[in-house]
Image (cartoon, rainbow, N blue to C red; front, side, top):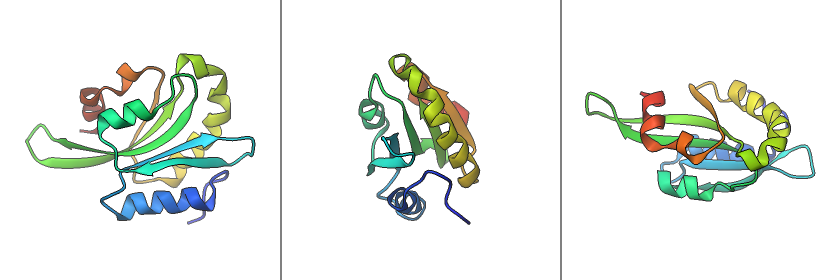
Length: 132
């Protein structure tokens, strides 16, 4: 499988580690002057840490593995692809949209895709409802 357009080798490696390692559950990308998405953060973030890591005035692309309990009480994990476009960063949406679309096609195992404009749209229970 080929890499999506605009993703650096470093970003591709981070996504691979997200798939393979338990200590990585979050990858955040940002746009720079180059057309490529730059890896901004790769780590193991709690839900609260993820929300705190997002800038209030700039867009980002996030791949995050959400851990939760299903309605039946079993432990589950679901990967999310999030296009973060806060109101103050709305003018950046178009430049991130192509990367978002490319990642949707590349990450076939990710079934939850969302665009969030405010942190309340990333509320934990809302994300669980989308993933379950």
